[in-house]
Length: 155
Image (cartoon, rainbow, N blue to C red; front, side, top):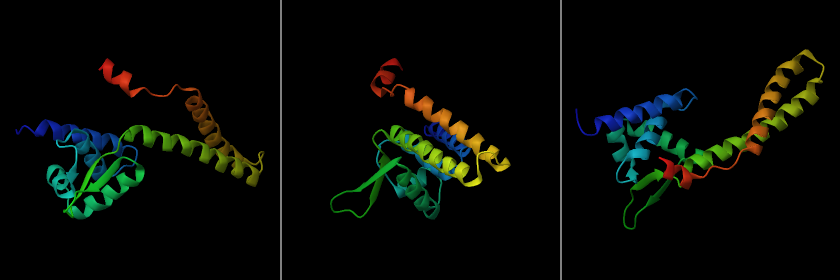
């Protein structure tokens, strides 16, 4: 057992947790790795070697995580290598995007109810989604914002 094995086991746990929500396992491994790696900036080659992913599958997953707001990247002067790292406040950024998506989906369900008529049998299925998303929107609207600094002090 190498010194890195416990880290990679933890990375795999992150990947399997995120896979439940449809995140590809490689994207989950990348995310888990970038949460614990040292140095915090890693090239695609370093990430590939650490998590055992092919460069081809890694490229599309790095692009996915970047578009979701989890990762940022940069180059260094005089180098062509791209280095990836967790975005500052990545989890807050991604969660806020998801919360904004709740409101967007409420607009869609309202339009669907107007389209089929609120008393139509089809409306029942749309209304179930609408009611759940409306509840989530109210919960998040009334929730206090996270305080990461306080959370770090408590751990």
